[in-house]
Image 1 (cartoon, helix red, strand yellow):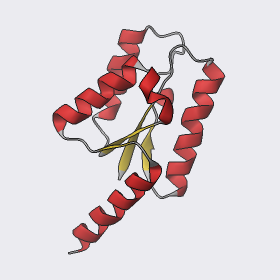
Image 2: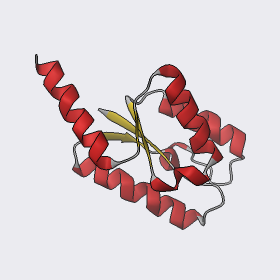
Image 3: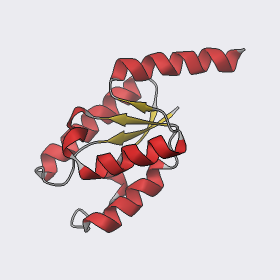
Amino acid sequence: MIVYIAGKVRGLDEKKAEMNFLRTEKELHERGFETINPIRLVKNRKEEWTPAMKITIAGMMQADVIYMQPDHVYSSGSTIERIIALSIGMPIFFSMDQLVNYSRIVRKTEEL
């Protein structure tokens, strides 16, 4: 299962934002998920917001589900990503436990 990570980037110290996403990415990998990390998608750290969002939304479309980091509530970009996910029926998770439980159900269903 491929998980897109959504959370606050703009307005945070660059290193803090990067660490938040890398920490989440690491935890997801340890739990057996593939990830799409928007921090890794936008190569130019000075990229303007709109072009950066176009890149990350294109990446998000390759995911099966979206995981919203706790700081997503402070991010207009994450809000847009959540609205897109809702609009296309992409499952959205706000806790790691919810995501893990969902993935177990999907795996069991696929085994049937």
